Amino acid sequence: MNESSAPLPSGPESTRVDRWLWAVRLTKTRSDAAQACRGGHVRVNDRPAKPATAVRVGDEVRVRLHGTTRTVDVSHVIAKRVGAPIATRCYVDRTPTPPPEATMPVIRRDRGAGRPTKRDRRMLDRLRNDLPPGPPLS
Image (cartoon, rainbow, N blue to C red; front, side, top):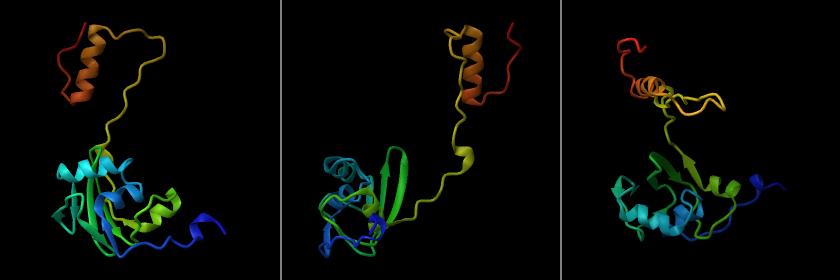
């Protein structure tokens, strides 16, 4: 039997939101989850959540981590950390995909090209800031 068809571990009817976020691997540590709650970055059923807020099956949890907002529906409550394949089955991810234009193109320089010159830096700044081209650089 592979891990994706393994039965989910039995869990309590409800648990703390900071513990659940850590258990389903949305945060790296439980203290990170508690800090996100205290900072106002976690909402349960569209209400601000403290670390001790109870989470039950069917609740919607919205978490802002590392500049992105994840929206998940709780499909199974667990209190202990489990493997990643099992953890992803404990929630339904409803996070909207970011628009393709939201990602910035990566500017690369040839290896061994050295430090950018003043002219190169100005051109890079124009690319990064989407400034219209200025007068020709000589």
